[in-house]
Length: 431
Image 1 (cartoon, one colour):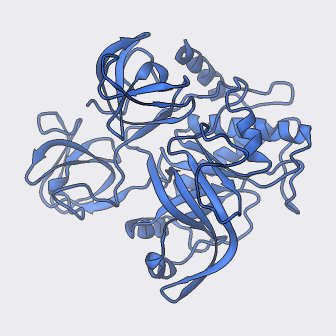
Image 2 (image 1 turned 135 degrees about the horizontal axis):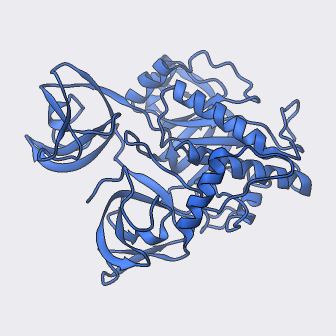
């Protein structure tokens, strides 16, 4: 079945550098695993990107703006602007202020790019270039404190869409960009022009020869921020929390007395995941599962600073049912941590969620974990199933596992590209 084939592809990709006579291709949904202390972060709203990351003071002033996320150029051979602000300390400070971050990597460009003086990919072995760029992108992301489960967006600037050799090189590069990011436990995003990279990716969306990115961010400066109705990408492609649009190019905006030159964006897509540092208010028992009846992994003395990755639910402790997942994969009750709330979720901290692509068109979303439950919607192939937990239900194919999604609907795990087609997938918790 599909997941068995995926595991075979994963083994091959894990050891392969691609040469001119042996270009590696993958199934559309390439394998993706999440480490224990990770999650994905979905941002929905308005964002901006600017060539040089703003200062903390500038972003403090811009809290008055409609923008709640910022694109940051983490690296790449074609990155042009200096980044004096872009440090791990800056990331910690601005994310604690509430900013979401959209990592952008300015990798090798198309052989027929319109960008002057660009470092270009090879036409004969673009996969090698992609593997090297991913290795650098992940290293840069980790140095900034961007955790596994983050999305990294490869910036593919506009190029000659009529050049078939160039098109082939770009698609091979982007396929390896995706599969290599997945192998290293990061989500794959691509920024592309509406008239070149975007329609070319759409043309191979269902091809078994190319790995499909998890999210698509298009450049179309028409002043329309809609995430649907794109003329070169069908609405059913990258349909569920997988789209960004740069709808206005270089211009100045001023908030809090600070003027920045920006591009304007709208997003509903995965972005960076970071740790949030908080202090234990009492002796803090970290457990294997979000419940006090499960084993203690480690106890933290009062005053210990802990790294919180995401929040989920569990049995009530004190005034809250919220539990925090830490960077080591264990769980602690939020009641004993100085997060902004001791009764409910803190908006700053993402929910614990693990997205995987669906592998069949029209996958039914149901009101419960079984085929007897009512159908409340469906998912196009390649859309992201944003999974919060797994549980047993009606057997479908080779598995009885069902996934509860972030919207509280359920889909069978058999048609989702998780790690197994027979049992549960770590580190997704049980419902």
